[in-house]
Length: 163
Image 1: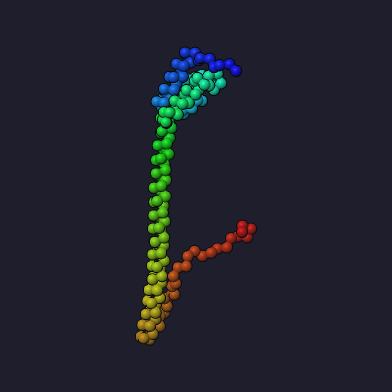
Image 2: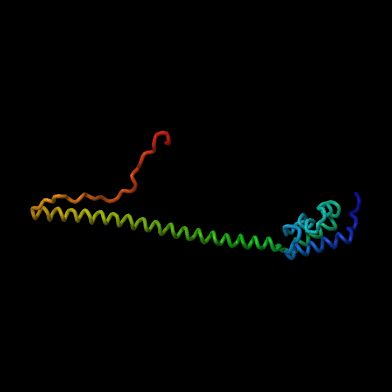
């Protein structure tokens, strides 16, 4: 197996400039990720120069540099910041939804109680009117209609063939 040869100076200069742009978060020709593929794309060279022709001299050097930098490129940082903001928005929306669901449950209980109290008040009124009319010996020409508490939506059966 042959020893790896030294890369040409022009290639080293192009790779250094591309690596600096990637680390600064100002890519010109790639997506900005700190990968060997994006480094080759940013330097506008063929990937095999890094991965096959000079893997120990060039590829390993830049992989180690990117790893040691523990640095996220600008596009990645922007995406992560947007993800964090969206997560916060989602948590806020979920909290608001829980609060609104609790409020809705409270309102439903109150409405049910008020409907029950109204039905009881109407029944008491009708009984009082009936007792008054009986005490006076009056017969109503048009007796008040008997009211009941609302029971909700009436159930309508589905038409045949759609069940």
